[in-house]
Length: 170
Image (cartoon, one colour):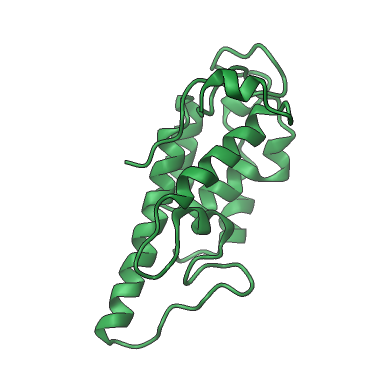
């Protein structure tokens, strides 16, 4: 996606366009379980948190161990996809501190109602690339109380508009 494409999009909300682009890019990468990185974001991957997500196979069999390893790998890949497509150092630091290698929880944090209403810096610049003991709800509740400066009105990432996102790249 080019920034010109985003500017001419029908929604007019670069954050929504960024989310769509991340999901589209995540859908390009799937594994032997049939789950994709995009499925991690929605909780629909094997072992995911969404209602109806296929469960991880139980037991110590080789197939079960492989599916569990793929589950962990998808979470790391989802986290990497998000972090690669965020330019703001404050957001990256916050994600690394609270959600390191936990793609689903990092996604939930970025898309939470509190953050989607927060003022955001402007401009969109690049295309997404692919290169726990606590519950996700508890992690999300703990993290949303401390919003990084990039997502507040006192942004350190050159804010020029209240509803768009230069900190998030697409």
